[in-house]
Length: 70
Image (cartoon, rainbow, N blue to C red; front, side, top):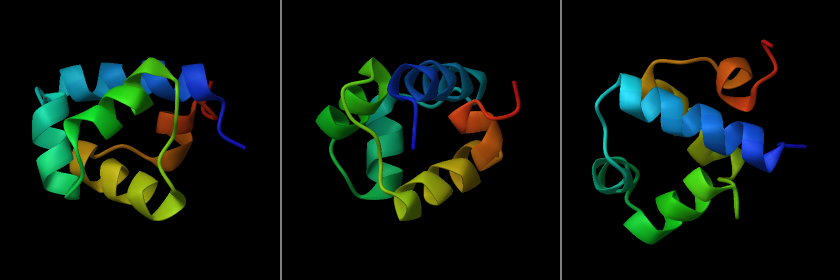
C-alpha cells in the first residue's frame, strides 16, 4: 500500500530535482494537471502502471518514490 503523504513529498522533491512541473508531467503521462496536483498533495495516488511511468520520467526507482528506501 502506498503511504499517500510520503509518496506526495517524494514526488514533489523528484519533480523539482528534474525541473518538471505538474503540467509537464501531466502531458508526459497523458493525464491532467489536476490529477498530478492530487498526487502531490497526498489526496490520491497513481495506479502502478502510471507509477512506473513516473519513475521512468523522473529516473528514480519505485522504492525511492514510495519511500521504501528510507
